[in-house]
Length: 169
Image 1 (cartoon, rainbow, N blue to C red):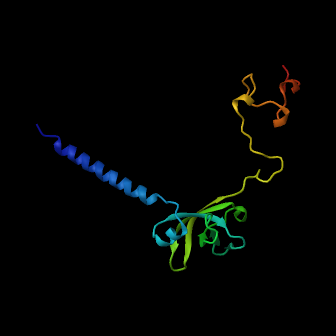
Image 2 (image 1 turned 60 degrees about the vertical axis):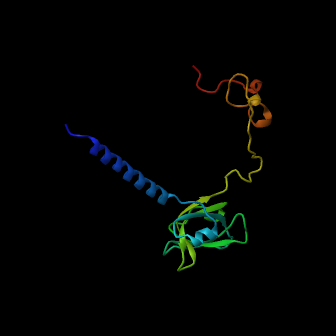
Image 3 (image 1 turned 30 degrees about the vertical axis):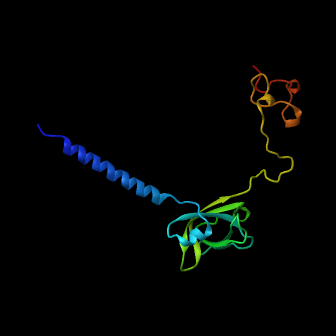
């Protein structure tokens, strides 16, 4: 009868190789957020975040290159020039914040982004009369309904509702 020990060693070795391969690929795929200084110093792909410096963006429709300057949100005197090759995102000029994913290009001395994440302002931001509301359990109706009642929050009172809406049977 043959021993199964060599098969167990082969299986264990295969699992170790697979785990090592998975770990290296996973760490390569991570793109951490870093400061502008760290982005310049590293050779790997990273994420840098900031605000758009007003009047700094230019888009070349022929080459598809978007150039702009990011301003560090924590230190407004720190900036980074960014080059993005691709379609200019919609509402780019109104962006609240921009995350550029890529690496520092030492030849052109700018951040070469291969991906952009643009956070635009909420469509409700700045609208008069809009305010974020949160309700506590005491504000909810006693009948188990899901909408709070009372004219102050825009929903009708229970006694203000007239007739049922929908087709009559």
